[in-house]
Every structure is written in C-alpha cells, then in structure tokens.
Length: 214
Ligand code: T5A
Image 1 (cartoon, rainbow, N blue to C red):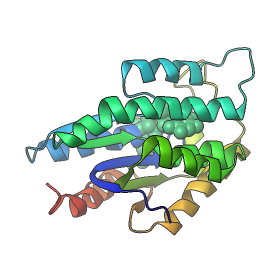
Image 2: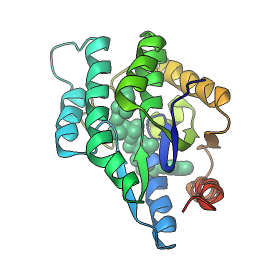
Image 3: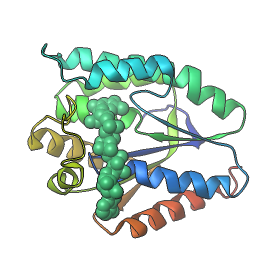
Image 4: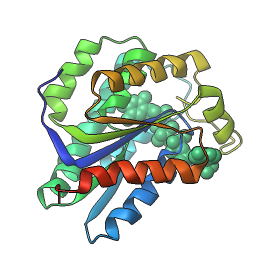
C-alpha cells in the first residue's frame, strides 16, 4: 500500500448516501469533547469557506454536464484547501479532526464510480493531500436502503444524488475493497442496524484509538 503518513488524530467517515455519517459524527464529537479534547468536525467537499464554494459548484445540478475529470480535480481542489486551511492547522495544535468524507470518497466515487484511473487519484493523493486518516469508519449500507432514508429530504436532489443506483453500487464496492486492503485503518460498520447500535459501534471503535493517542 501507499507509504503516505497517517495521522492518529485524523478520523474520517465514509459510506454511501444516507448511511448515517452526519448523525454518527455528532455522537463521536460529543464523546471526545466529554474527555476534554479539542475536536474539529468538518466535511468534504468543503470544510473552509472557499472549499464550500467549490462544494456548491460540485453539487449544483446545473444544465451543463460536468466531466468526470473536472469533478475529480474540483474534489481535490477542495481537499487541498481543506487540508491546508483546516485539517493540518487543527492537527498541529493538538486537536482531533473528524471529517465527513476524505480521499477514500474520490477513490470510490470518481475512481470506482466514474471509472477514472486509480493511479491518477493515488498520485493526487500523494502530491496534493500528503496524509491519510489514522482511522476510517466505513458505514456500509445497501444502496436502496440509503436512498430510502434520504428520499423526500430535499425536493431538489444534488447533482451526484441524481446518479443511478449502479453508480453507487460501484462506489460501494470500491470503498469496501479499499477497506479490505487496509484493515488496520478501516473499521467497517453495518449501517443497516438501528441508529443507536451504529453510534455505539462507532464510539467504541474510536475509543480503541483514543487510548494512547492524546
Ligand atoms: N463526493 C464526495 C465525491 O464524489 N467525491 C469525493 O471525493 C467526496 C469528498 C457529498 C457528495 O459528494 C460526493 C459524495 C456525495 O454524493 P453529501 O451531502 O455530503 O454530499 O452526501 P452524503 O455524505 O452522502 O450525506 P448524506 O446526508 O446523504 O448521508 P449521511 O450523512 O451518511 O446520512 P445522515 O446522517 O444525514 O442520515 C440520513 C438519514 O437517515 C437517518 C438519519 O436520521 C437521517 O434522517 N438514519 C438512520 N435511520 C435508521 N437507522 C439508521 N441506522 C440511520 N442512520 C441514519
């Protein structure tokens, strides 16, 4: 696997649409803050004012088709800003960083989903991002179940939510393959279980890592 450094206080959540990442993040934050740690909760695409503007561009279902390459480079433009302006400064001052998605999403969605070259994504990860999370919680959920959870939430689904199920199936298979290849970093959680069980499993996985990584 890659020789990129992983940071023990950088924790990412991955998973399909409606898997529960946002909900679980709130519980993880509360658990860490209760132990007196500084916690920064952030997300991708986005996580800084400028990167949030890139997010708007990426998710806006405008009339012009967006090429897969454009999408990939904008994801990494957002990530470059996020790492430099939010993630790295927080890690440098000793905070924990919990991010709703990170580079694994690009491997899943733009790589496995859109069929872009994984080698190109790996090169961008190495040269532009330069670090990996110490822990990645993958909330794994059947695509149809995830869709059912978010259905009706937004009358105007975003550009990526409009994709067909086959796209999300490929993305899901892609991230599961990454988890299998990096069992030390990933914890795969069954996100079809009741929310309180998923939250408890995520909190326990994070607790395992917080010991000794203060
Ligand atoms: N993207 C992102 C890329 O293509 N490449 C990249 O490199 C990156 C970084 C981001 C989009 O960008 C793509 C991926 C995405 O398509 P987003 O809005 O952040 O857009 O999309 P999601 O991350 O998918 O966010 P969602 O809000 O759709 O999903 P969550 O956060 O996983 O789900 P959550 O917590 O909002 O829960 C959804 C609903 O389900 C319920 C919740 O209460 C909520 O109502 N729920 C449960 N119900 C029953 N049982 C459970 N266990 C439940 N867990 C949650």
